[in-house]
Amino acid sequence: MRTTILFCLSLLAGTLSGADFVITISCDGMGSSYMQSMMDAGKMPNLQKFASEAAGTTNARADYDITVTLPNHVSMVTSRPILGKQGHNWKSNTDPKKGQTLHPANGITVSSVFDVAHDNGKRTGMWATKSKFSLFKVSYDAEHGAPDTTGPDNGRTKLDQFVYETASSNVTARFISDMTSHPCNYAFVHFGEADGVGHESGWGSDAYFNALMNLDACIGRIMNMVKTDPLLKNKTAVIVTADHGGELKQHAHPNNPLNYTIPFFVWGAGVTKGDLYRMNKATRSCPGYSRPGYAAKPQPIRNSDAGNLALSLLGLGPIPGSVVNAKQDLRY
Ligand SMILES: [Zn+2]
Image (cartoon, rainbow, N blue to C red; front, side, top):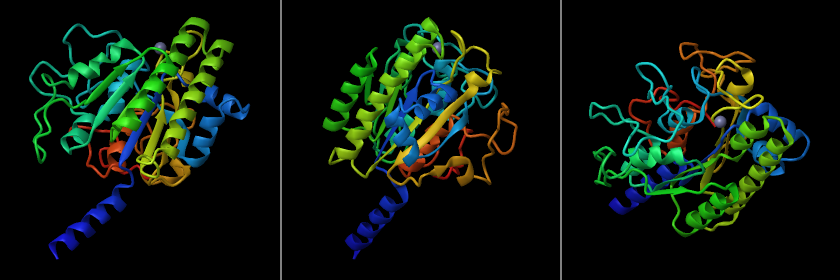
Protein backbone atom coordinates (compact mmCIF):
# COMPACT_ATOMS: atom_id res chain seq x y z
CA MET A 1 0.00 0.00 0.00
CA ARG A 2 2.70 2.40 1.15
CA THR A 3 4.82 1.45 -1.87
CA THR A 4 1.84 2.04 -4.20
CA ILE A 5 1.22 5.48 -2.74
CA LEU A 6 4.88 6.42 -3.01
CA PHE A 7 4.96 5.14 -6.58
CA CYS A 8 1.87 7.20 -7.50
CA LEU A 9 3.32 10.30 -5.82
CA SER A 10 6.57 9.97 -7.72
CA LEU A 11 4.65 9.53 -10.98
CA LEU A 12 2.66 12.67 -10.21
CA ALA A 13 5.82 14.61 -9.38
CA GLY A 14 7.30 13.47 -12.67
CA THR A 15 4.26 14.74 -14.55
CA LEU A 16 4.28 18.07 -12.75
CA SER A 17 7.98 18.77 -13.10
CA GLY A 18 8.22 18.09 -16.82
CA ALA A 19 11.99 17.79 -17.01
CA ASP A 20 14.72 15.88 -15.19
CA PHE A 21 17.42 17.97 -16.86
CA VAL A 22 17.54 21.68 -17.71
CA ILE A 23 20.26 23.31 -19.77
CA THR A 24 20.48 27.10 -19.91
CA ILE A 25 22.50 28.37 -22.87
CA SER A 26 23.59 32.00 -22.77
CA CYS A 27 24.71 33.45 -26.10
CA ASP A 28 26.86 36.39 -25.02
CA GLY A 29 26.16 39.47 -27.15
CA MET A 30 23.48 37.88 -29.33
CA GLY A 31 21.09 40.78 -29.91
CA SER A 32 17.69 39.78 -31.26
CA SER A 33 17.81 41.79 -34.47
CA TYR A 34 21.11 40.20 -35.58
CA MET A 35 19.89 36.72 -34.67
CA GLN A 36 16.58 37.26 -36.46
CA SER A 37 18.22 38.46 -39.67
CA MET A 38 20.49 35.42 -39.67
CA MET A 39 17.57 33.07 -39.09
CA ASP A 40 15.57 34.79 -41.86
CA ALA A 41 18.51 34.26 -44.21
CA GLY A 42 18.60 30.56 -43.29
CA LYS A 43 22.05 30.96 -41.76
CA MET A 44 21.17 29.76 -38.27
CA PRO A 45 19.17 26.65 -39.17
CA ASN A 46 19.57 24.95 -35.78
CA LEU A 47 18.41 27.92 -33.77
CA GLN A 48 15.62 28.48 -36.29
CA LYS A 49 14.39 24.92 -35.75
CA PHE A 50 14.83 25.32 -31.99
CA ALA A 51 12.81 28.57 -32.03
CA SER A 52 10.05 27.05 -34.17
CA GLU A 53 9.60 24.25 -31.61
CA ALA A 54 10.04 26.45 -28.51
CA ALA A 55 8.01 28.76 -26.31
CA GLY A 56 9.79 32.01 -26.89
CA THR A 57 10.17 35.61 -27.88
CA THR A 58 12.78 37.75 -29.60
CA ASN A 59 11.57 40.71 -27.54
CA ALA A 60 12.87 39.87 -24.07
CA ARG A 61 14.90 42.32 -22.01
CA ALA A 62 18.28 42.44 -20.37
CA ASP A 63 18.56 44.05 -16.95
CA TYR A 64 17.15 47.60 -16.90
CA ASP A 65 20.20 49.40 -15.55
CA ILE A 66 23.21 47.51 -16.87
CA THR A 67 23.77 45.72 -20.19
CA VAL A 68 27.12 44.05 -19.65
CA THR A 69 28.04 40.40 -19.29
CA LEU A 70 28.86 39.35 -15.75
CA PRO A 71 26.15 41.31 -13.89
CA ASN A 72 23.50 40.00 -16.33
CA HIS A 73 24.70 36.45 -15.84
CA VAL A 74 24.47 36.86 -12.07
CA SER A 75 20.86 37.97 -12.70
CA MET A 76 20.18 34.88 -14.83
CA VAL A 77 21.24 32.50 -12.06
CA THR A 78 19.81 34.49 -9.12
CA SER A 79 16.63 35.86 -10.81
CA ARG A 80 17.32 39.25 -9.28
CA PRO A 81 17.79 42.72 -10.80
CA ILE A 82 21.36 43.99 -10.66
CA LEU A 83 20.81 47.15 -8.60
CA GLY A 84 18.61 48.15 -5.67
CA LYS A 85 17.54 46.66 -2.38
CA GLN A 86 16.46 43.41 -3.97
CA GLY A 87 19.28 43.35 -6.50
CA HIS A 88 22.37 41.18 -6.28
CA ASN A 89 24.47 44.33 -6.75
CA TRP A 90 27.31 42.64 -8.64
CA LYS A 91 28.30 45.46 -11.04
CA SER A 92 31.82 44.50 -12.03
CA ASN A 93 32.48 43.05 -15.48
CA THR A 94 36.10 42.08 -14.97
CA ASP A 95 37.85 39.06 -13.45
CA PRO A 96 37.05 38.93 -9.74
CA LYS A 97 39.96 39.33 -7.33
CA LYS A 98 41.33 36.11 -5.88
CA GLY A 99 38.79 34.66 -3.46
CA GLN A 100 36.21 37.37 -4.19
CA THR A 101 32.57 36.23 -4.21
CA LEU A 102 29.26 37.78 -5.18
CA HIS A 103 28.03 37.52 -1.62
CA PRO A 104 27.88 40.72 0.45
CA ALA A 105 30.41 41.02 3.28
CA ASN A 106 27.84 40.51 6.05
CA GLY A 107 27.89 36.72 5.99
CA ILE A 108 24.71 36.48 3.90
CA THR A 109 24.96 34.40 0.74
CA VAL A 110 23.18 35.32 -2.48
CA SER A 111 21.16 32.26 -3.35
CA SER A 112 21.05 30.95 -6.91
CA VAL A 113 19.50 28.32 -9.13
CA PHE A 114 22.54 26.21 -8.24
CA ASP A 115 21.67 26.39 -4.50
CA VAL A 116 18.06 25.27 -4.91
CA ALA A 117 18.86 22.49 -7.37
CA HIS A 118 21.83 21.22 -5.36
CA ASP A 119 20.10 21.42 -1.97
CA ASN A 120 17.37 19.24 -3.49
CA GLY A 121 19.88 16.58 -4.43
CA LYS A 122 20.37 17.58 -8.07
CA ARG A 123 23.72 17.65 -9.83
CA THR A 124 24.74 21.09 -11.16
CA GLY A 125 27.38 22.46 -13.50
CA MET A 126 28.59 25.45 -15.47
CA TRP A 127 30.60 25.52 -18.71
CA ALA A 128 31.88 29.01 -19.48
CA THR A 129 34.10 30.68 -22.07
CA LYS A 130 35.25 33.77 -20.13
CA SER A 131 37.65 33.67 -17.18
CA LYS A 132 35.52 36.08 -15.11
CA PHE A 133 32.92 33.34 -14.71
CA SER A 134 35.23 31.99 -12.00
CA LEU A 135 33.04 34.28 -9.87
CA PHE A 136 30.44 31.49 -9.85
CA LYS A 137 32.93 28.75 -9.10
CA VAL A 138 34.31 30.61 -6.07
CA SER A 139 30.97 31.99 -4.82
CA TYR A 140 29.43 28.52 -4.73
CA ASP A 141 32.39 26.44 -3.59
CA ALA A 142 32.78 24.46 -0.34
CA GLU A 143 34.03 27.53 1.51
CA HIS A 144 31.60 30.20 0.27
CA GLY A 145 28.40 28.31 -0.57
CA ALA A 146 25.53 28.35 1.96
CA PRO A 147 24.87 25.45 4.33
CA ASP A 148 22.22 23.07 2.95
CA THR A 149 19.19 23.21 5.22
CA THR A 150 16.82 21.44 2.77
CA GLY A 151 16.32 17.72 3.39
CA PRO A 152 19.52 15.64 3.41
CA ASP A 153 22.72 17.69 3.61
CA ASN A 154 24.21 17.83 0.11
CA GLY A 155 27.00 20.13 1.20
CA ARG A 156 28.02 23.72 0.58
CA THR A 157 29.52 23.21 -2.87
CA LYS A 158 26.55 24.23 -5.03
CA LEU A 159 28.37 23.81 -8.33
CA ASP A 160 29.39 20.18 -8.77
CA GLN A 161 31.28 20.94 -11.93
CA PHE A 162 32.84 24.10 -13.37
CA VAL A 163 34.57 24.09 -16.75
CA TYR A 164 36.38 26.99 -18.41
CA GLU A 165 37.23 26.66 -22.12
CA THR A 166 37.65 29.66 -24.40
CA ALA A 167 36.60 28.29 -27.80
CA SER A 168 32.92 27.61 -28.52
CA SER A 169 33.64 24.30 -30.25
CA ASN A 170 35.83 23.10 -27.33
CA VAL A 171 33.36 24.04 -24.65
CA THR A 172 30.61 22.31 -26.65
CA ALA A 173 32.65 19.12 -27.02
CA ARG A 174 33.51 19.14 -23.34
CA PHE A 175 29.91 19.83 -22.35
CA ILE A 176 28.55 17.00 -24.49
CA SER A 177 31.17 14.60 -23.18
CA ASP A 178 30.39 15.55 -19.55
CA MET A 179 26.61 15.57 -19.97
CA THR A 180 26.50 12.17 -21.63
CA SER A 181 28.87 10.53 -19.14
CA HIS A 182 27.80 12.15 -15.86
CA PRO A 183 24.83 14.43 -16.56
CA CYS A 184 23.94 17.51 -14.56
CA ASN A 185 20.27 18.05 -13.75
CA TYR A 186 20.95 21.77 -14.06
CA ALA A 187 23.62 22.90 -16.50
CA PHE A 188 24.58 26.43 -17.55
CA VAL A 189 26.52 26.90 -20.79
CA HIS A 190 28.03 30.24 -21.80
CA PHE A 191 29.23 31.06 -25.33
CA GLY A 192 31.31 34.24 -25.48
CA GLU A 193 32.53 34.15 -29.07
CA ALA A 194 29.98 36.50 -30.69
CA ASP A 195 30.62 39.13 -27.99
CA GLY A 196 34.39 38.91 -28.42
CA VAL A 197 34.12 39.30 -32.18
CA GLY A 198 31.58 42.11 -31.76
CA HIS A 199 34.05 44.14 -29.67
CA GLU A 200 36.80 43.54 -32.22
CA SER A 201 34.99 43.89 -35.55
CA GLY A 202 31.60 45.33 -34.66
CA TRP A 203 28.09 43.98 -34.11
CA GLY A 204 26.63 43.26 -37.54
CA SER A 205 30.06 42.80 -39.15
CA ASP A 206 30.79 39.73 -41.29
CA ALA A 207 33.01 38.37 -38.52
CA TYR A 208 30.19 38.78 -36.00
CA PHE A 209 27.74 36.97 -38.27
CA ASN A 210 30.30 34.18 -38.73
CA ALA A 211 30.50 33.85 -34.96
CA LEU A 212 26.70 33.51 -34.84
CA MET A 213 26.94 30.72 -37.42
CA ASN A 214 29.53 28.92 -35.25
CA LEU A 215 27.24 29.37 -32.30
CA ASP A 216 24.39 27.88 -34.31
CA ALA A 217 26.48 24.80 -35.04
CA CYS A 218 27.22 24.41 -31.30
CA ILE A 219 23.54 24.72 -30.43
CA GLY A 220 22.80 22.10 -33.10
CA ARG A 221 25.24 19.69 -31.45
CA ILE A 222 23.62 20.23 -28.06
CA MET A 223 20.12 19.75 -29.54
CA ASN A 224 21.28 16.55 -31.16
CA MET A 225 22.62 15.29 -27.83
CA VAL A 226 19.32 16.09 -26.13
CA LYS A 227 17.35 14.32 -28.87
CA THR A 228 19.49 11.19 -29.02
CA ASP A 229 21.11 10.48 -25.63
CA PRO A 230 19.09 7.68 -23.98
CA LEU A 231 19.11 9.39 -20.58
CA LEU A 232 18.43 12.94 -21.75
CA LYS A 233 15.92 12.20 -24.51
CA ASN A 234 12.39 13.44 -23.72
CA LYS A 235 13.52 14.46 -20.24
CA THR A 236 15.48 17.62 -20.98
CA ALA A 237 14.42 21.23 -21.40
CA VAL A 238 16.74 23.87 -22.89
CA ILE A 239 16.59 27.63 -22.32
CA VAL A 240 18.37 29.91 -24.81
CA THR A 241 18.85 33.56 -24.00
CA ALA A 242 21.50 36.31 -24.03
CA ASP A 243 23.01 38.78 -21.60
CA HIS A 244 22.79 41.74 -24.02
CA GLY A 245 23.09 42.68 -27.70
CA GLY A 246 25.39 45.38 -29.04
CA GLU A 247 25.98 48.14 -31.58
CA LEU A 248 29.17 49.17 -33.35
CA LYS A 249 31.85 47.77 -31.01
CA GLN A 250 30.11 47.96 -27.64
CA HIS A 251 26.98 47.44 -25.58
CA ALA A 252 27.48 49.69 -22.58
CA HIS A 253 24.41 51.94 -22.92
CA PRO A 254 21.43 50.30 -21.23
CA ASN A 255 19.01 52.64 -23.04
CA ASN A 256 19.95 51.41 -26.53
CA PRO A 257 17.33 48.96 -27.91
CA LEU A 258 20.10 47.07 -29.76
CA ASN A 259 21.71 46.40 -26.37
CA TYR A 260 18.64 45.56 -24.30
CA THR A 261 16.59 43.52 -26.81
CA ILE A 262 17.44 39.85 -26.49
CA PRO A 263 15.92 36.42 -27.27
CA PHE A 264 14.40 34.14 -24.66
CA PHE A 265 13.36 30.62 -25.68
CA VAL A 266 12.51 27.47 -23.79
CA TRP A 267 12.33 24.14 -25.61
CA GLY A 268 11.97 20.45 -24.86
CA ALA A 269 10.43 18.32 -22.13
CA GLY A 270 7.29 19.80 -20.59
CA VAL A 271 7.24 22.82 -22.90
CA THR A 272 4.40 23.87 -25.25
CA LYS A 273 5.56 25.77 -28.32
CA GLY A 274 4.26 29.27 -28.89
CA ASP A 275 4.77 32.97 -28.29
CA LEU A 276 5.70 33.50 -24.64
CA TYR A 277 3.91 36.86 -24.41
CA ARG A 278 0.71 35.36 -25.81
CA MET A 279 1.03 32.47 -23.35
CA ASN A 280 1.54 34.85 -20.43
CA LYS A 281 -0.92 37.68 -21.08
CA ALA A 282 -1.91 38.06 -17.43
CA THR A 283 1.59 38.31 -16.01
CA ARG A 284 3.93 39.61 -18.74
CA SER A 285 3.59 42.43 -21.25
CA CYS A 286 5.37 42.76 -24.59
CA PRO A 287 7.33 46.01 -24.25
CA GLY A 288 7.37 46.97 -27.97
CA TYR A 289 10.55 49.02 -28.39
CA SER A 290 10.49 50.35 -24.83
CA ARG A 291 12.62 49.64 -21.78
CA PRO A 292 10.34 49.09 -18.79
CA GLY A 293 11.81 49.46 -15.31
CA TYR A 294 11.27 46.93 -12.53
CA ALA A 295 8.27 48.91 -11.19
CA ALA A 296 6.33 48.41 -14.47
CA LYS A 297 3.38 46.05 -14.27
CA PRO A 298 3.22 43.63 -15.92
CA GLN A 299 6.94 43.08 -16.50
CA PRO A 300 8.51 42.15 -19.83
CA ILE A 301 10.15 38.74 -20.07
CA ARG A 302 13.78 39.13 -18.96
CA ASN A 303 16.90 37.01 -19.11
CA SER A 304 16.66 36.90 -15.31
CA ASP A 305 13.42 34.88 -15.63
CA ALA A 306 15.71 31.98 -16.52
CA GLY A 307 16.79 30.92 -13.00
CA ASN A 308 13.32 30.44 -11.57
CA LEU A 309 12.04 29.06 -14.88
CA ALA A 310 14.67 26.32 -14.80
CA LEU A 311 13.65 25.39 -11.27
CA SER A 312 9.99 25.38 -12.27
CA LEU A 313 10.83 22.96 -15.10
CA LEU A 314 12.62 20.74 -12.59
CA GLY A 315 9.59 20.84 -10.29
CA LEU A 316 11.43 22.87 -7.64
CA GLY A 317 10.45 26.09 -5.87
CA PRO A 318 11.93 29.54 -6.46
CA ILE A 319 15.33 30.91 -5.46
CA PRO A 320 15.18 32.45 -1.97
CA GLY A 321 15.37 36.24 -2.20
CA SER A 322 14.66 36.27 -5.94
CA VAL A 323 12.40 38.88 -7.51
CA VAL A 324 12.05 38.02 -11.19
CA ASN A 325 9.63 35.14 -11.86
CA ALA A 326 9.68 34.58 -8.08
CA LYS A 327 6.10 33.30 -8.30
CA GLN A 328 7.27 30.97 -11.08
CA ASP A 329 4.26 32.16 -13.04
CA LEU A 330 5.99 32.25 -16.43
CA ARG A 331 3.97 29.64 -18.35
CA TYR A 332 5.52 27.53 -21.09
ZN1 LIG B 1 30.86 42.45 -24.32
